[in-house]
Every structure is written in structure tokens, then in C-alpha cells.
Image 1 (tube, rainbow, N blue to C red):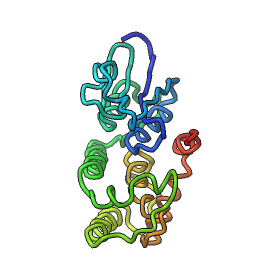
Image 2: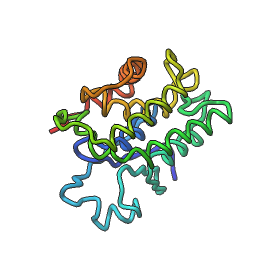
Image 3: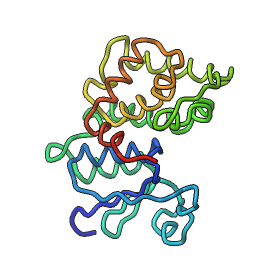
Image 4: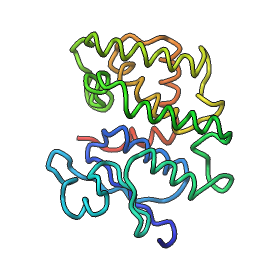
Length: 211
């Protein structure tokens, strides 16, 4: 590796929640980076060149010089270790227990709540809402999401851990699958999700050109 030459590979529609998470981390860290887009529908992520970088063939992948890393939470953790505070903005809480909790939130959002992710893909956020009602399974998943988020946040907190962390962006994105689509969400969580959506690093992702 030489210097801070970063390239982030993302989907060409800028619709991946995981690409968004890695993008927000890079913006928060205040470093210059190049975006490389791949057309997933055309199978560009399965090309030999990309497979040699990503190994998993998934979006996003970060290249830092000759080092390549996929999986968005791993990318955020790598950048946090590589570019620590105070020289760069922190994207994880300082306290070890809060940091562990932030990683817990990220892991849960990526591994659970599948009915929400299937029935309210990020298409409803970045392109158009769905008119199909949530299934019983998705309603049950939403109930678990609301219960966990309310427990973590209380009823009026702006952030999960006192100050912003990347886990706030990830949680807000999951909530906004429902909020932006017009599904029923507790008012306190609507307020939280909308507040997180106004963060400048998130706004930069939202402003990217989409077809």
C-alpha cells in the first residue's frame, strides 16, 4: 500500500445499502476516493478482474493501493483503524462497550429482518415506493425492528450512542425502507430516521445520479 489511494466499487444504480454505508464512512473520514461502478444486472461483478479484487464477488469492495477488502462493516472497521481520531472523524463510538454494540447493530441489520429487505428493497428509497402491503412476516419483522430501535434509542435520542456513528446510518436506512414507503412506523423512529438522512455524508450519497 502506498498513501491513501482509495477506490470504492459500488453498484451503478447507487442503490446498495452496503455500498452506501462504506461510502458514508469514506466521506466522514474526509479522504479523497474514486468511485468505480459495476452493472450488477449485466454481471460485471462476476468478471474475473473484479473477482480477483473482491473474492466474494460482492458490492462494495474497497481498494487501498494493492489491498482489497469487501463487506461494508469490515470496510468501515478497517478505515476506522487506518484513519483514527483525532486526525480523522470517528465512525464508531469511543467506549469499547458502545463500539461493540454498534457492531452488534450492524451485524443484526445485515443478517436478520429478511422479510423487510425482500418486500421493501432499497428501490422504495431511491426509485419508487411499493404499493404492495407488507406480509405478516414483514409486519412481524418490523415489530422486532421497532422494539429493538426503541430500546436502543429511548423515545427522543438523536443517536444510538450519544454522538453519530456509522451504525446510525445503517439503522436509519433500514427504518427508511418503511418510512419513505409510507408504511406505519412509530413517530419517534420516523423523526430519528429523517434526522439521520440529513447528515451531509448521507446527502452526498443521495445526490449521486441514478437512472
